[in-house]
Length: 276
Picture (cartoon, rainbow, N blue to C red):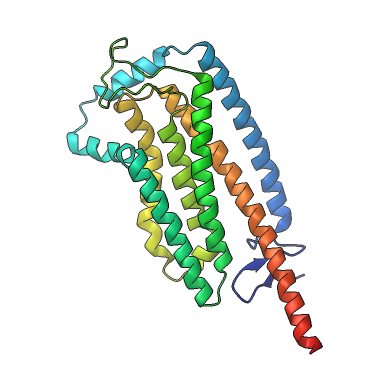
């Protein structure tokens, strides 16, 4: 059976293709592998939380990594660039940036609606982005409280602290986890079918490059500033990846359900018109 495409631009799932236009058999094989890797990552994360909870003190690799990063004599302009993701990730600018993206996606959906295109995809993207970022932040706070690892303290460890000492637990790194989910989900959306088919999609290249830079630099920044240990950052990367792939899976599932619903509604409309 050939793939069917909704007149508003949404790819309809068929017996052989998914809502994203992929071969269904290949998609199932990839999905099985993704599930195995996701479960493995979750198990590793839980084990890491238990180990850190039982041994909250910094490990030798934590101390040596922080010392190496903070005494690397990196030029100030380079440090400013590398630390920018941490500044952007503070509560107020982070909330403003999320609001801008959500409103922007909704506006694109409104424009698509006026042009009789697939507005529902943009609305779903905005909703899933907001839910993914906010819920993962809440789960990170819960993980931090359960593990209960104290923050790096310059009064007890031989490190420098470039930000105010906060009394919140430190494992896994919330900034790192947030950026993985936030920029990772935006990156995923930038490669989905509606965006790829946009004639000016190459305008997104600078953003995509920044998103990759932010995801890489945030870990370095958290260690340099003295806010987190290396193991906190690695835990944040793993936690963020777990949440990111979970929400991508839910987004794909919801997109498929919506596509099938639209297809059925279109079929009923056509049948009703023919019956007249």
